[in-house]
Length: 301
Image (cartoon, rainbow, N blue to C red):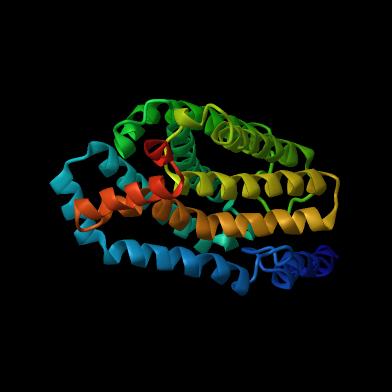
């Protein structure tokens, strides 16, 4: 009788229950969440321009290093290194879009996004500080006085975002999260500050205090374009926070444009002239732009 009881208790139910998790895990891949993931075309649209800019910088690397060592400008050396740092981080960020929907990659993606954001923002804030300072007699070398200011602003900004992301769980860098109010509130605040700052630069440029700003029209073309970009980003944040699909799409478009075009645009505007072969060409470029802007009209009156 005791033996029959032992035979009526086979471990079949446990086998069935052990197979159920295997079936569930095989139904959905454990590594990736297939919904709301960016496709290959999106990643390529970001990565290819970022990679081409790295190739461009690498092609002229030897020549630019010679120019930097010849002029011995510590400011330009620091900015060139920061440009390379930002460009490499931007390429990594563009290429690793799949981390947004990869299981266990949340922390890595947020850290990479914070570092990429800090590099680009440091360049942008430094250039803003350069445009706003009154003493521009030494040209591009006055950027040295802006590193402390830009470093402080960027440090506070990144610390605040790190607290939001890791402390309060706000998905700042997750594109699939489109309804989180904390996310849209932070980006709206950023876009508002930058839009107002560029708007102030343009206001001063077209006012009677114009002589307090650097006399280079290319700088104001930069300010106009960045004012439009951040103004559009502010509008997109306002629409996106209301749940409007067009606002979310527009904000994504602005993000693509910023990550693919900002670093080359900044390089052409502020750094390309420094690496010209002859110093005379640089002086002629500055003189021509100032003459076209009408800064020498008073000499003929």
